[in-house]
Image 1 (cartoon, rainbow, N blue to C red):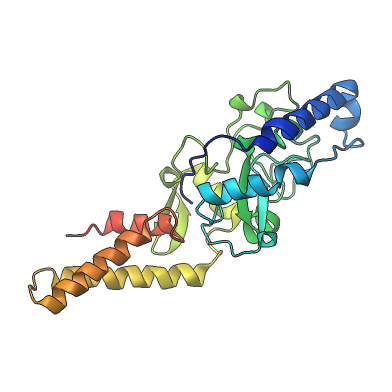
Image 2 (cartoon, rainbow, N blue to C red; image 1 turned 30 degrees about the vertical axis):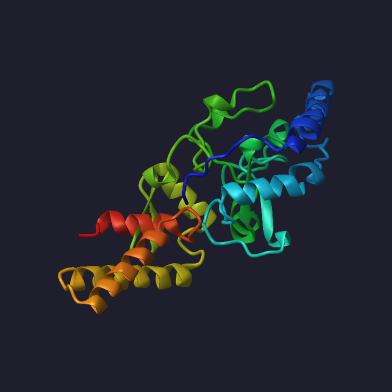
Length: 257
């Protein structure tokens, strides 16, 4: 996982999204008890939060990768999911926990709450999980304060650099903090694309070995090979490269001479 920096919210969210959010908030205030017990449900519009302009904007800022596992999401868009960081319908502290109604309905069309994720991370693992360090601080409706929450799933577009929370043992992601450990476990990041990450890790080791072995060789063949190795290692840490967080961790431990 790498940090994602977003720009301005797409127009669709600023117009239709804002209007629909007002409707949801008014509906809740009119009958909070029914929404709190789950008997009343909000009808969310995927045509708004999943609009092509929203998807395109997310794809651009995420370099076409899943916000969590960094796998490149293949076209068509049906293979990707517009992920709500804070779940919109309901939330759960753990997989065995009861559903907590309502969800973060007032954030269903909020740009800061939307990400692009692969099916494995979104539907197979995270789903409606949103654990907090202190459950009592959970914002229960739009009158609550999400700023008081301490989420245990790392937000890729948040203020923290995910690399401060997640490190790598060879190709396997491991948590450095409680939030890092929880994120790796709940999203299955240590299982997702294991073979692909291992293949890349071995390639990184090979190219690094080339640089070390031939760095003092001034022959044209060696010079070209070392230049190619540098190019491969440099491109591996670019934001648009798959598993660039792992590549960065590798080079942090094995700096080029």
